[in-house]
Image (cartoon, rainbow over all chains, first blue to last red):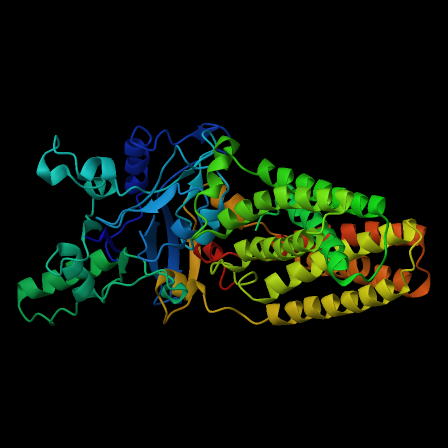
Length: 227
Length: 304
C-alpha cells in the first residue's frame, strides 16, 4: 500500500479548515499534544502539521489565486528518515506512512532540514519533532464507521478538495484523479518521490453559445459566477 | 539557515581539536619534529579538551537531550549517528595513545595511526551531515567536506606550531607548510564563493508545480513566524554578508599568513591563532546564514 492524498488545487478555497481539523484531532492523538506558545498573544507560535499557503499564478489579467495546503508528502525516498540518528523517524513498510516515535526523538532538527516541504515542525513544549501521521490513529480504527476511517483533514474539507487513498491501487479514487487530472509532485527534481499529488486547476469549460432564451440566461448567470 | 551558536562553537572548536590530534599523530608516524613526552601529552590533552568542549556544545542545541544517547543507533544510514559513534570511539583510542606515549609502548605508532585516521574520518563525517542535504544547495557540494578537513588541519596546525615554539623546537619548516596550507584553503574557499553564485535547480515554479507560469506568494497562511520561518527564513542584508566575508578572509587567512611569513614567534603565533579562531567562527556563521533551504520557495522566494 502507498497511502497518501490527492489535493485539488482547482477547488481548494483556502479556508484552513483542514489545518484546524488536523490540529484538533492530532493534539489529542497519538503524537499529541501539539503545543501552542502564547496562543492569544501578539506572536503565537506552535506546531502545526498542515499549513495553507496562497499563491498568485501567472500575470494579470490571466492570474489565478491558488491555495496550496502543505503537509507531509510521505515520500517514497524519505531523506528525513535516513538522516535521523536516533531511529525516531521511520517509514512503515505496510502502508508507506512516515511517522516519528515521540519517545525516541532528541529534537536535533536534522529531519526538518532534510525535508524540502516544511512538513516537520519542532514542538516548543515537548522538544520533539511533529509531523502529519495521515491520522494513522483514525484510518485503522474499527470502532469508527467505515466512511469515517479517513484523515481528519479529508473528512472536514468543505469542497472535498482532499482525497485520501492508496496510490498503489490503480483503481483507487486518488490514482484515477491523479491520472485524469495530471497530478503533480512538488520539487520532483530533488528525487524524494513524494506520494501526495496536487491536481492543477482546470481550464474554464467553454459553453456553447445558446440561441434559446434559456441559453442566454445561462450565459448571463455563468458570466456573473465567473466574476 | 538560522546559525545556532552551539553548532558554530562545536564545529570550530572540535575541528581544531581533531586537527591538533591529527598533527600530533602524524608527527609520531613521520618523526618530523622531536618534542618532549610532556609536550606531546600537553598537545594530546589540549586536543581532547577542545574536542570535548565542542561535543558538549553540540548537545546544547538539542531540544530533547535526554534522548541523545539513542543517536548511536542508526550508524548505517545517518551521518549524524556515524559522527556520534566515531566521536565516542576516539576517546578510548586517544587514551591508549596517551598511555603509549607516557609508558613508551612499542605499539605507539599503531595508536597514533588510529588517532590520525579517526580524526580525519570524524571531520569528514561531521561535514557530511551538511553536505548530504539535497535541500540546501549551498551545502550539497564536495567542497564542504574538503573545506571542513582543510579548516581542521589549518587551525589544528597553528596550535601545533604554537606548542612547538613554546617548547623551543625549530618551527620554520612547519611555518612554511602552514603558510601553504592557508593559501590553499583560502583558494578553495574563494572557489566555493564563486561556485555559490550559480543558481540551483529548484525554483518557486518547481516547488508549486506551476512550471509554465510566473508564481508569487500572496499569503503564507499564518500571521506570526512559525518554526519554519525561524529555522529557514533567517535573513541578513546582502551588504552585511559581503562585509563579513571580507572580515572572515582577513581574520582567517590574511592576518595569520602575514604573521607566519613576517615574524613567527611564540607570542605572535598566539595572536595568529586567536585571529584565525575568530575568523573561523565568522566563516561558520556565514556557512549557515548564507545557506538557503528550498522551503523558502514555499514562502515566496523565487529561487534558492
